[in-house]
Length: 445
Image (cartoon, rainbow, N blue to C red):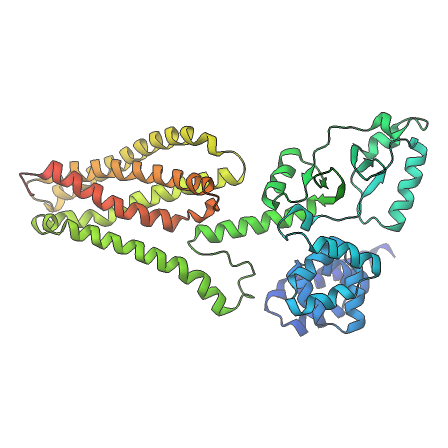
């Protein structure tokens, strides 16, 4: 019997994994058909594992009876997410499927911005009064768990006005003497989140304290709900996806790649691409400014891609490091001078390494092919010194731009690698030909 049960469990697991693998390429009708093949417990687990956008699309393809069942099955915070992910014309209909008490609570959640702690929280949580004895508290928690709680991580102690007084862990509650009161064993130093806290700041709060849940309070310290760690996992993935897309020099898609409309995808990519193209036009302008120098020493043009790509690459490295450090809270605006000193030193060292490689390459090619003429040593010095200057400038620009954007209130991820590279390309041309004028003046120039 046990072997048979294990075999059935394996078959269900295989069926679930097969549906998950094919999910992205299935039509809404095919997804619904696949879900209906599962028994109800497996279908519930599968639906709960889906992102809100897929849940909304799936629920909207069901019959009215099924739709009501699925909406009432969802935890309240998940129901709010599904309604927000649904098309605007469908939201009222989905909200109306909930029972009266759930309708009010979900409507209250929808009043918050989707990216705020209030929009992520679950209004159902374990609560106690401070004057309860430990025995009374355990009995009361059992009743709460049966009636309304989907998850219980911590127990929050509230006064009659629902203001937070403290928190009790289950371990402390179960090991405490039965006659002690909740007030005797609760902790009053509680880590909390404001209802309007941004989801990125909230994720850092979870990361700093390693809690499974954090209570959400309003200005008067009334507990509005709790945010659990499983909600934050989705937030972290969403924020990381947005940052990665911005690093690529485009707007965040805000939807799965295969599900976003083609016109929307083009629009989100075309804006930044056009801005970068216009920026690169300045490179051509800078080249034109030094046209006479290029005409007198054509060999200088051979090293233009080498110079500007090295500066762009170093700037992209620095920008990526600082943006990520800002996202993780490792760097703050007040640390700007420390960042400048580190990146200045790093730029000089990195530029020197590339300068040595570039110098050696010119000497080798001159020895083998006599490519650069009688003034090859001066050309090597020009390229090497330019690499030091361009790479140092690239690292400084790449590291400072995210901090500058954060200071202005913009998303630091907008300092994407292509944007930094474009900025450094233009300045790299100026640095290169300025160094050439200083070193090669009176010889090639």
